Each structure stands twice: as structure tokens, then as C-alpha cells.
Length: 396
Ligand code: HEM
Image (cartoon, rainbow, N blue to C red; front, side):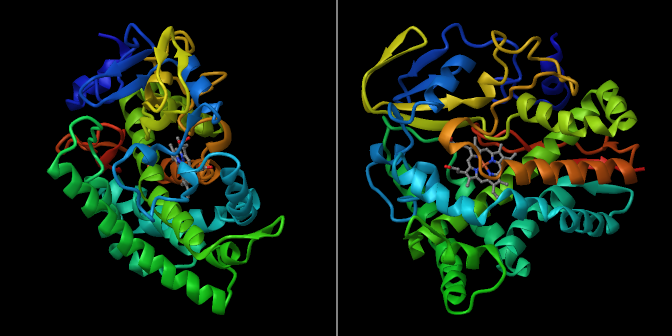
């Protein structure tokens, strides 16, 4: 048994789904006939794809039967030069200083959420989910009390975005797509109302900054503001939640690593980076080939969908020594869970800050925290996401 599969054995996780393996498939680039898509697994190949947006486009929706006004123009699916224009504008509002200034508020919220904790908690519902959602809602300037509303829409949206095939286009799949777009419609209407209000009465929040931002004579359209706020709200919901849950789970699984972090809090950022590598929250991202390419010893035609497996690249033994070992002192840790290149995660500084602050407070207040032997964690069932959705802990 390798170190990497210990976690899978203990909690009955499918190691294939979670990339809890120490070996990549024999070929770094393979074709999935059932889905009609390519898989890219090797670290080197993943970096190559993400670093070359002229060849590998992010506009994956162009292969889908119908386009949607909700996804069109979203920053994640744009290519140069449009991407650069939008990224510049939103970076103007979502700056490192805006993020760094949030530290005291993140700490206060973490304490507040933990004050309600008894001897046992579900880490996800009591801290890892509400914390990032409240932070992003406050930052955007939408009422944090509305979070049950957008939780419902986002949960429904993610529930339906599980498996998708380009080959077997079925009525069921069309229905799921329609239902997902309906949820996105609710979220967009809601954010659109708030954005319109900020155009009339600007405040000190991110939505006001987004409607006012101007770079090189360009401003964001209403649709662009709403689409970007959508991305932030969805990203703010699930990603940091998975990161915090996964980090606590890993420290519980490898007590000698937890002991190191407890003894030297300077290792907290290292634990967060290693958790991102070991259990990468977004297992995949996607690209479409603009031309025929040679990648990983294989020829791939033009207009082909590629699933880019960040989780696999993060366990590529050609790049990482002993990828199946969870090591908070790994140096250098060149994990690629936030992507690479022009679309590198804009929220990475926020996710890292929330992870560091919350983990430090958890360890300060409950150094003996451990998984509850009476209640096993539950994992998100979608194959493209790696994270817990319930993590019962005993705190004292
Ligand atoms: C992009 C992962 C947290 C906002 C991305 C990408 C990845 C990623 C892999 C690149 C996708 C691609 O190249 O196709 C993660 C992970 C997170 C996290 C693992 C937490 C552990 C966040 C948070 C926010 C955020 C908290 C905002 C509040 C964004 C945005 C983009 C992005 C706006 C698009 C950037 C662009 O296209 O230029 N994220 N993310 N992310 N992320 Fe994150």
C-alpha cells in the first residue's frame, strides 16, 4: 500500500476519481471515445496547454450545441485579446491590497463561527462553507443574509454540471443544461439588480468598483459586471470550502505532519500548498484546440475538447518526488491547482489568506481536533471536484 492510497482505504474513496494514485496512465495524453474528449495528464503537457492560449482556446462553449448569454463573455472562457481587456479591468478592482485588508475581518468571522461550536462540529457547514461565502458577499456588497438564496442556486447549478459528453447528446443532458442555465439566470438577475443599484448610488464595495472601473478608456458592460460577479460568487462558494476541509482532513490522516505544523506555525502556508497539490479542489479545467497539435507524443486534431487534469499533473512522478506522500515541508512545491498562464486564478491570494487565517485559528483553539470516529466524512460526488461536503470533527 502506498502512502497515497491510505486516505482512500480509510474513508472508502474511489482512488481513481480522486487521483489518489502515485502513477499516471501510461500515456500523458489519451482520447476518451465515450465522451469524445481528450485527457491531458502529464505536468509538462498541462503546463504547455495552459501557457499557449493561441493554440488552446478557453472558449470551450463553442463546441456546445447552444451558446448562452450567461457564459458568453465570462472571464474564464475568453481568449486574447478580449481576455486581457477584461482581466485588466477586474484586476483594477480586485487588487492584492483589497484582499490583504480582509485579514482582520476573516479572523473575526472565523472566531464568530467557531464560538457557536460545541465539542463536535461539521467543519464544512459550520466554518468552511459559510466563511468564504460571507467574505465574498461582503466584499461584493450583497447582503450576507441572502446566502441561503444563492446557496440554493449554486448547489443546484453544481449538482447538474457533473458528467457531460460531446458524443452522446441526449435529451436528459439537454434538460440538465437547461436547468443549470435557469439557476444561473436567478443568480444573474439577483446580481444585476444590485449592480444597477450601485450605478445609481456607488458605495465602497467591489460591485461599485466594478461598475466604475475604467482602463484605457474601457469600462465594463452591465453583462460583464454580472458575469464576473457570478464567477466570484460561485468560486467563493466551493473552492475555499474544499481547500479548508481537505487540509484539515490531510492533517488528521498524517498526524506526524500535523505535529510539525503545531510545533511551527510557519509551516501553515506549506500545509495549504501541499493540500492543494495532494487533493486539488478543481481536478480539471478545459481547453479546445484551434489547430492540429502534437502533444505528449500524440497528434490531436483541430477543434478538439481537452480535459486538462490539474489533479493528475500535481501527482506526476516525473515532476514531483514521491507524489503520493503528503509533506508540508515539500520544497519547492510547484503545485498547479490554481492553473497557469493568463487565466491563473484571480482568487488565489484570497483562498490562501482564508486558508491560512482559518487554519491557524482552528489549531490555536482546538489543537486536539480530529475526525469523528462515529461519523465518516462525505465527499463531493462530482468527478471533477475533490473535496469534502461533510467533515464531522471532535474538537476537544
Ligand atoms: C480561475 C482554481 C479560489 C476566482 C481559476 C483557475 C483555476 C482555479 C484552476 C483557472 C481555470 C483555467 O485556466 O481554465 C481555484 C482553486 C481555488 C480558487 C483551487 C481555491 C482553493 C478562487 C476564489 C475566487 C476565484 C476564492 C474568487 C473569489 C477565480 C477567477 C478566475 C479563476 C475570477 C478566472 C481568471 C481568468 O480567467 O483570468 N481558479 N480557484 N478562485 N478563479 Fe479560482
